[in-house]
Length: 200
Image (tube, rainbow, N blue to C red; front, side, top):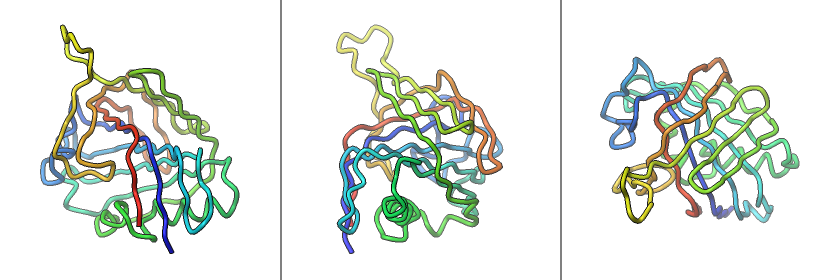
């Protein structure tokens, strides 16, 4: 079995400003728990010979204040536009069953709250990224550009250990309502990343 995905990504969590656990899972979240939505766009990809290009996946997670303590609770949304075969393959990749970055998080997961098919609409417009997932998620983030910046380039966080790779763009939530799998929160901190690859 082999697979390769070319992805774009963004997230929003319940922490204030920049999420401490992005720098290290050993650093505590700013609130009593970390609640986060991870959104993945498959720009191009194939899993075991099945084309999954153009589909979207989202992970909703609730973790202890210190993420490295484990016992994460998470649920997975798979694009309703996926065929049964595509949904099966995407579920295997994003659950970590087929290896890759999500498999590395497996030991931290204490409870899987479910895998659901749902309409997932992802949009990107310059610095803004948004997702709607049925009635469960309505989220928009905006990449942060430093005040007075002549380049107008957003702020980057580098050297991180993250499923989306070692460099993330710092963002903030401009709209955030998440109520899925028994996890409800409004996000503040956010990150994005465009055009990176996973393979196994």
